[in-house]
Length: 218
Ligand code: DC
Image 1 (tube, rainbow, N blue to C red):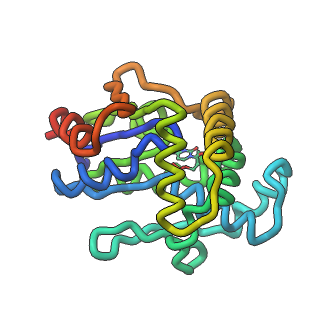
Image 2 (cartoon, protein in one colour):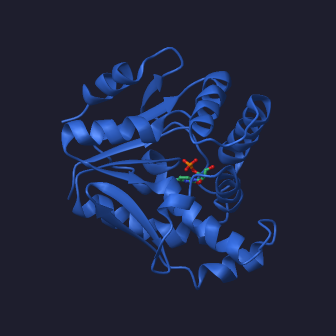
Image 3 (cartoon, rainbow, N blue to C red):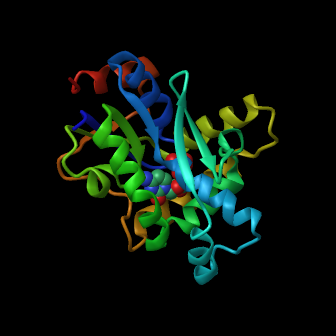
């Protein structure tokens, strides 16, 4: 059984940035479960399926194979044998992932992959339901959040740096809608596990958050 750190929280809270740094410092593998939902989202987008069309989404899950490999310590996500890592982090894929991840069959599809990775490795795994649902017995649970304004600004800076055209107001609006969906869906909604440590990073630097989380880990 691996040593397991679960890190959950809303979109743009900095989970992946922080989890990658904690993984490096502690020698864990970083598992980005959002990337798995995004890979399935790419599959649905490629097939031209509307997220509201639940039956078609469920059907499309049957011919989607998502797998993970680690290359130089970095997670690479494969969809039906193709490395899709480079095209996962668009707003389109994120919104599609948010809309389809409420469907139980979509979650079921990724559950074993996530649990197996945690069983076989020391991991820090980020997502929405890791502490509550995927790894309820995790050694450490963190709920990482920040205000909508802070999260929107971070996402904006990230997209700008990649040279993408974007609008701060629109991003804030998307984040609010994403929170609403992620927190209010019936299956595995985003919420703080009772035994999770709450970290609000709105006014914290990256090294401060990393150090706070590392202080709770073995
Ligand atoms: O963390 P992210 O932005 O890459 O995640 C994209 C979407 O995937 C998010 O809006 C909700 C969904 N997701 C989920 O339902 N459960 C997870 N464990 C991770 C992500």
